[in-house]
Length: 466
Image 1 (cartoon, rainbow, N blue to C red):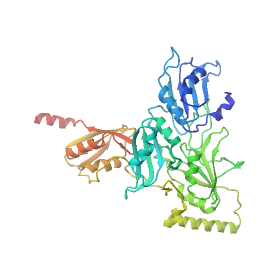
Image 2 (cartoon, rainbow, N blue to C red):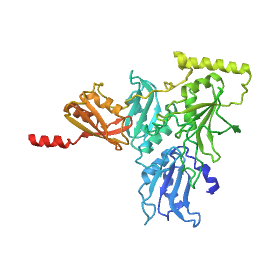
Image 3 (cartoon, one colour):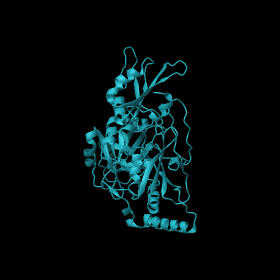
């Protein structure tokens, strides 16, 4: 393929459909195509070459038509030899703007999906629905902590990236399935939508640079859009992670009256992570802005919604008064009227909710009821050692989980490490915690729970008593 036309073929759409290969320099495009064509439709192969010598640099990109094809190829071909006398190749999902690095077959981010479900669904219903796409490690329904009622949202974790990709591609569209965003990734970036300007393209790989999306000028129709202080029928939706036009437009189409919805692209054809949505009435636009600005889709990624100019003249006093009246009525309905939610259309039993509050503990483990912590100066009878993957849970979440067995004294996380200690005033609650929690997943974090080695002083005391 001609280098000048290559940029348009390297759109990361669908997400995770492009592979990054590390090979021997003798591996050619023909050899790569011969070994990878069995996994699906190959849209492009790019063997990166030295500009001066035209020799291969030992790295290549393979673009598939589907994410599941790329993931299957990665799983099957990583560590294989493509020709006699060559080293085993390394195969990764190529870096996109939403990921900080190339991702391999062990990457947990590629195996967990986020779905919208009917509120009547149980965990078993969720598993039964998605087990056709592969082995499921766990399924979690997000519930209101106070009432225990389902929020109509859930997670499904598969064993392989290809299984998660097939589920996203083939499940009923009403589930609006997407890859789940890790909780820790954007935990401290709730208000970063306008703080980080976009980086320009650089380097030979059109998809190798990552950037944060900002409220910026973008192409819309044949003109430019700009953030507007005036309430309009046109909204600019910004996302900090990779989402497709179908996913965002499907979410905003829950509100009646949407005329059209379009992904914004740069001069190279790359998605800017911004979608323009236009409604046929001011009331729907106001409702969408108030309800979905800050909505987490997927959890951990807050959408930013702002008004942009829709080309209509609202400079006249009458126009301003009409706009203010409609806006005031709609905002009053949004925040004060229980019937306001009736404006939202339903899909598979799901009614688009207001900005959800995250339940503190999300797991498919049947946890006992909460119990009070005991005094921190009680005598320690047993200590547990916990290993977290990929990162530690917050202390308040750990207290919430481990207090349920009784006699919990203290939770301690080792700074800079993915481990911690749990102190109990009795041995039985500690052993019950191990039996129920070892190897289980809480809030997307897998825990290994085991008895800790006794402190040296305590160990010496025990030896003297024996």
